[in-house]
Image (tube, rainbow, N blue to C red; front, side, top):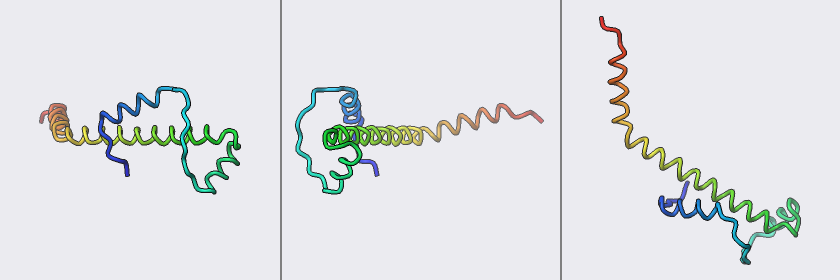
Length: 97
């Protein structure tokens, strides 16, 4: 399930993800198996880079889902009008008898 994110917040997130700001320290608690898995994949020296890439990827996927759901809502809202217009065009294309 995609969290309910406003269009304004989604735009803010997109702008933030395009930036490459200076690194800041953060303390994050992870389970032991995740830390060991990160060390296997990236090594202790690159653990933070692996976590950063994972979080960035998660945010990009989340924003993609938010955009997709917004687009579907817009399409659904216009479906009746679009279908009527299509029916009218199809009627115009039929061969007279």
